Picture 1 (spheres, rainbow over the protein chains, first blue to last red):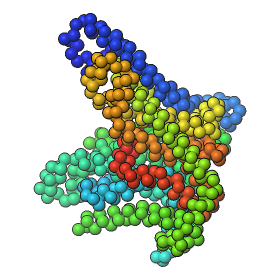
Picture 2: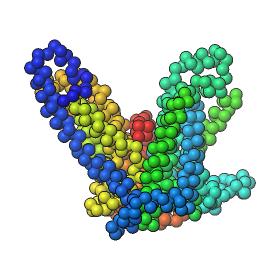
Picture 3: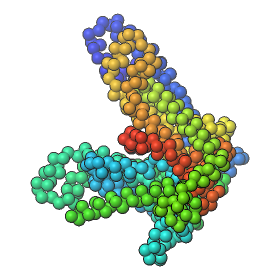
Length: 314
Length: 271
């Protein structure tokens, strides 16, 4: 038996061999109780979460309508997606565009607002509370409110635009093959910027004030201070924000499912919504399972890549 | 100068971008639909509770509300209990396998639930857990255990061993150590996890969508989807439903802003 925990061994040197023996025995008995404490959580997690994740992987190699027995077809689902699957290709493109927009703007805005609201003044705290507010809402509620804003005829945005004479800008925000994906990306950024701002504020407040004072003594402008102090010092926080924003953008199922269902003509479909649609709309469970393998791989790859880039560069 | 102006401008713009929709929604629930569409920002010409009355008398939303309360409360409390117990065990186990167990839980953190929906649907279908509220509770627990265990284990590891040792000498069992030393000390961390779990479970759409088709078992987010269809573009009714669905979280947020912000952020960052 190995003792990993250090504190427990404190003072063993002064104890007699007999008490060492009894404490080992005690540890063994205690470990049994500790194991019993872990067991219920472990069982529930393993049976209801780990196991379905693994069986999901198994279905990726089958053809299955969700009712009859799944038929093993090897790598066929995967070869099809690579060689002959226009929708998959389109959806992949959508996903890249959507994630790219969300990652760039959400990170930029949350950093900007964090810098603006860094000091703990009363106004700053009030604004932080306001900006964070959307985080507590359900994504379905957020989607419904933005459907009202984007509604083409009487919706808030187009009414506003027409009142100011920009009739040509009053677009069909949720019915267009070109702009709807961007409109939803905007909603996603609106939804989560406040939360990432809070993460940034926590990170920026760790930067020693002396660094700014020194930079100011050297006559550095605000932009130079940002470039040479804030940005490099905030890189670990940026890594966290990027990783989280990326995963979040890949998971933006609720917004898209509620606002457009992936339409028009698959132009707002991303991987998660395509997985759901393939399985529960078209009963192609095996194909859908193979798509989720892609999703996991992409997420892991991107998170790993971001960490690599941020680490090697500085 | 440029900095100051752009700061004030962008801060106000984003503030308005949140405040205005919130006002439109809140005011809209006290208006007729036509009035909401034509004068979204004006105060209601005549304040009316008609939207609320229609919705509540319809009965559907009260059922959905009750389902959400039951599922959320059960999920949060059970997850807290199971996760704290397991985290305490992992943090205090002498055996090396504790690290392996923790890694096993962390595995669940890297895989978003959305990627396992076919496996989950299949398992819950074959166990007869579809269209049951306890099925929903089970998947909520299973999917939030990793993040909860992760946060709580980190906390329990910080409790100095001496505290346990003095109690152990008095012959306290591990169970007593958990209950009378670890639990009371962990109140702030448990609070943060609880808030995080509350918001996640209350707002979740994916699992109810996956498992529940029976209308009297639907939770609020799922019911909101139905209202979208039922009331087509009657936004004052939709907003009233949104309001009812969001109110518990909004009230809690306003009552404890700080703990909400730190709790949700801890969950987000570590998840």
